[in-house]
Image (cartoon, rainbow, N blue to C red):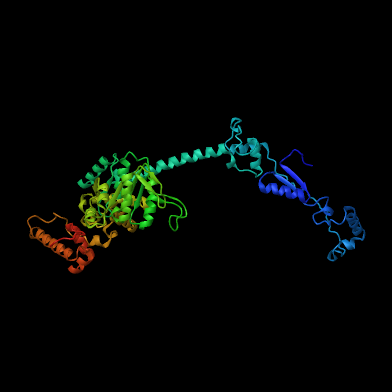
Length: 504
């Protein structure tokens, strides 16, 4: 029975009472949690389908008479067939599986593995969910828990891993310092020393730097040296070659993107500007970016904020920008493919890397430096480079600059069968030019000594003529001159005319 004073639960019997409660509910006059409504009154006999002409007593007699006629009259034909009763009995088995009980020594070993050696270490923090460390150790022994569930133990492991990562980081920094430090911008010539002086002057400042020079002259090496001398050398140096990605991917790489901002953007991505926050970002081949990205980069430099692709929110970043290019940006400004305002923002402090052909005095030093690197990489014992090979390298014009020399030395180190790099181990072009005399080798009082300068002037004039007619295209100029392209290229390097469009 319900409490008569309880308004949370209401009961009603009969048509009138039930309909009254339903009306009250519909009108919102009452709001019980439970409503027990029985439409029938005094059972089914007095229900809503009752015949008002018959009394309740007479209807009761009709029900009793129907019952006395037997089960056959009370059961539908399809259920009158006799069927066996199902066996409703059940059997139970003891499914208890006895878990192994650890010995005291087992518990001690598990506690030691979790870094708990004294009673003080067993001060329970309940992070594992067990009432005590020993109960937790028993669960570990029985396979119901893992060692990683112990929070203090996990924290100790994380501290150890952190220490190892710090050691690895410091080791990597030392290796990078040895690889890219200023002492390995190798060269004893005046131009190289001037570049090192500029690096040491601009490094400690926050000034934006533009590194210019031909491909392979060591622009990335210079950027790393600037970062090393900067106040941000404990922060990341992030590098990116702008020619390796398409326009849309480059924008995503630089500024990041939000999930769903374009096809394939299945997750949010952090951009390189964001990753370099507090440090330095180096963008190589900056002259190859499109006008759209030039505008985005200018906006970042002006506002100091980056906005991910597909996002309306901007984020402040603190970065030092270093860029590099092998293109003539001034010509780009004049011709309209490079923004003038961006050019002036990038060209705050320019460093021009000299080509190797103008640093001939440093060729022997560079050759031996790259030999040392090749020895370590190939794990070969090579003592020296033959003098004739050095002389051939001095005469070579090195169109690929420092990168080409490094590859040539490594190739020679692979080919040599003993502990000496010989002229035969170098590419064939070095053997072809090894017989050519060095500048100044001719006797002063000889026909050749007096004739050579005039030949050089005529040769240079012809080269300029062919270059002009070919509009600066070396392959076309070599065809006009009817000489092999590599030979033509070598002669260009000798006169400092590589890639120039000249007027005859």
